[in-house]
Image 1 (cartoon, rainbow, N blue to C red):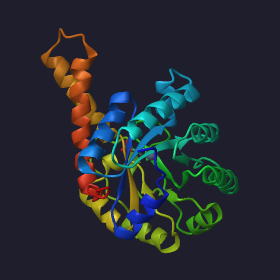
Image 2: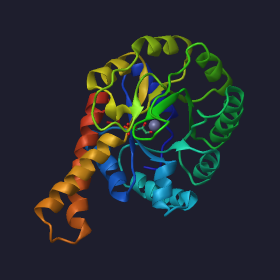
Image 3: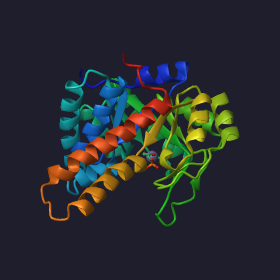
Length: 288
Ligand code: G3H
Ligand code: ZN
């Protein structure tokens, strides 16, 4: 299949009450792990690359990174029998434009650090650009904190009194909200703020997105999906499975030097973790 837009899938997730899994990749093996899991589960899938991951893949040049990812993503989708969406996660303005030009089928602009009016103006313009190219657009309102980054650990919950205006004036296909999760937690310890989720859901029509799901308790994620979360972002949990596998292999085989020996099992381990998340989100079998 060619790369697919996520617009119809997000609407379907909203109507039918399941969560589209959006899985972050930092390497070719991780992209493959996500696609292999989707194939095995017969699930539509969002493979997402953050601006920071593009910087790593492009050896410091984010645009080169995006070009490499676009090429790999195209082939990954073409060799899959299930719908694959290629999404730019947490993009800057220049990265959003470049990703669209390169054929990404979905982009996120993260303007959470901007003042309200400027965030609206930039978000709206980029949303229109994405739509003119047939791509889906994710906006964000509120700031999900980030563990381990001094000054960013706290974040800022989505303001329920302003979110309706933000959504109405930007018209995104999906809206990322901050309801208590924190990026990059290595253990599941956080519960979501359901009163806040309900308040947002009551005034926003766009499908809602959960960032930082790795640190959120599974019951809380499931309840969140029941209450209207439609796209669930997962990164740290997958990196954990991938890296644990490599650590175990190298501890058991300290003299091996062939990267295929440990990257192969790491890809399998991450695939299993993605499959488990897909089943939990209720997206397995939806592409069948
Ligand atoms: O944008 C990516 C996600 O929000 C992933 O967060 O690493 O806590 O799962 P996570
Ligand atoms: Zn995120």
